[in-house]
Image 1 (cartoon, rainbow, N blue to C red):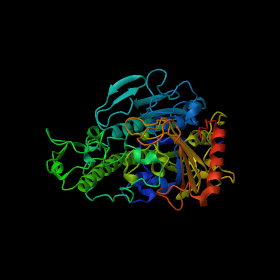
Image 2 (cartoon, rainbow, N blue to C red):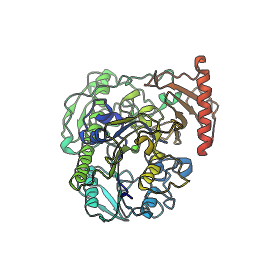
Image 3 (cartoon, helix red, strand yellow):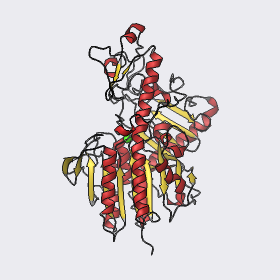
Image 4 (cartoon, rainbow, N blue to C red):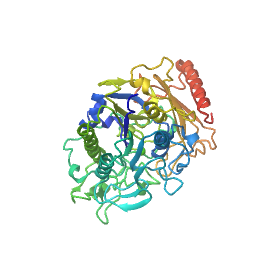
Length: 503
Ligand code: CA
């Protein structure tokens, strides 16, 4: 029998596929991450079950949906007595480690289990001089988080037991908000990044949730997020905290003429001649900081691939690069995630395994993050336990996708109207052509609308004809049959995974 493959699972936090050059959008250059695509496979339709950090991580670790693992929100830590993929691998001869972001809770009931070695950031962690909880002991480490996580990963790989296969989860904090780049990359983008076509979206023809969300770069991003401070006594135009009651406020010319922002690192001052100029400036600050944090992750992937090359481990090691979900990079005017809309729903996923996956392939099949754990076990030769709800992706990676592969992804978001983002709870499905979304609007209380869940809304998008998801077709008589078919698929999916149908 051949030696089971090693598995290195590299996961970033909030890294949209659009910000990986292998996905072809051209807004940044990630040569090391791209190597995985060129030397392996790129997935174009990998989706998250719940587009926020903590639930996605629980789904990945356990191979179950969030109503089953009970990690439905950012405030529901994992019960670490549950079985997880690391425990199964550990019990079957693998040495296991997790380094970096955990975000599934702290203390003896929630800290990592199933790992021979763990060193994780408490909560979200810090970009500079972060604290780590290492096997239960907290300590501060000087430096930049991405580089420290890389060094720790390389140290663990270098000191591992050579007689065993290994499973390493290397989880970066970047490019999570507040997007603090390594100082050496702060000014790496001289040219402006192209503004997305939907940046000025008016949210017409959509459910109310889109207009209600407080995720707009224009109105809701803070200057602190952008590495900016205001001079003492200066006007506070646009800072989210000041706009709670009047968040659509457009600064008037007098306000703008007295308004100034200061770069917190360099002291450079910025002034603005028009609201548009201020909005454009915010977008550029946001996207450049976001992309600059990714430059350090790309370096990290390069170092790990170099280690595998130097130690003759590349052929028999599966290397995956993904993110806990996608992210809005100005599409619909937004930053952040949470929604089943494509930009935050889609996860980047690249995999290289020279012994088992042919180079330069692209997979168009639909899969999701509950499939990851069964996939690891399949490659490790471990029986996939029946409690896991996902399917091994190995047949897809070996270009033998079964005829009856589901080609459907399910998403559910529970944190209805969380105070920071005001994103509405919803669930829905996407298949190869359409996306159906149900907004149950529980406690819906925008002025002029009904109270108490009587104003549920549905959306149907044609993913092929309307990839930007700008036209809700749910009430279009021409799509009556499609609505019926998609509703049936949604019901079947919810029944099969045991989630409660609310519609
Ligand atoms: Ca995240």
